[in-house]
Image 1 (cartoon, rainbow, N blue to C red):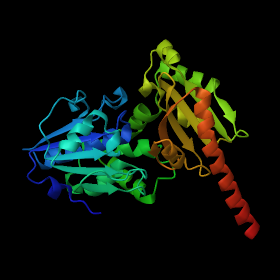
Image 2 (image 1 turned 180 degrees about the vertical axis):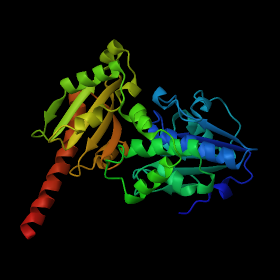
Image 3 (image 1 turned 45 degrees about the vertical axis):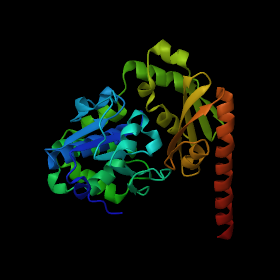
Length: 329
């Protein structure tokens, strides 16, 4: 649907914005981009962003220091936005969403049923930042806004290498970098660059990885004891699953880290042979066809066995379909 942001927020004195738990680049970029835009268009309104504390790699983004990470008790917002997520993944911000006079859910995850009074869910678009770009009046776009939206685009398209990158995505990215921010450094600092300890943990995960399903899949896990040894948190593990996926011959990569006793956060990346969004959805998670995640309980081997059944089914289905196609020619 066409959403007129300014019409929907007209007259609102208090506007709230939030995204999913453990915010990534797209979630953060969308929240800060919308925050800047609405603050510019409605200078008399109080516009607030509520998120769990994002990683420090994003601290150069305008509004980073203004994010409320404490989720205090608040009077009901006139309008509340849930960005880059379904409502059930808002975490502590869900209370604001439920109490708001008007709720708007903007997302690009195919697994999102839409939980707001107004829903804009576009799985055909590579990032929520790209949807925000489509919804704003480009006459209001400035350098700071362009920078945060660009960050979201590069993070959810893997710097334009994932299959969710379209010609329209690249046209919008070209428009954004025309505002003159240092985009090469932004890509390096927020996407590729790792601290020494992050590189050590990644090396450990790669060294202890296991290939299975005739080498088409790979899995690695980091337990709490190892995270404590290296003094790292979940944000320090970003990029490991992508590195596993980059290994030659891998159609599906799985990375897991322990969040509690017999509890794991699971991230998956895949080739066109496996729709990991469908695999994740089976376990109550979600995401994109090539990048998805979920939470699992059980031992490491239990989790891998449960996931591998669905991955194997997907691989066999893909092979059967392609054999049939080849035979028909």
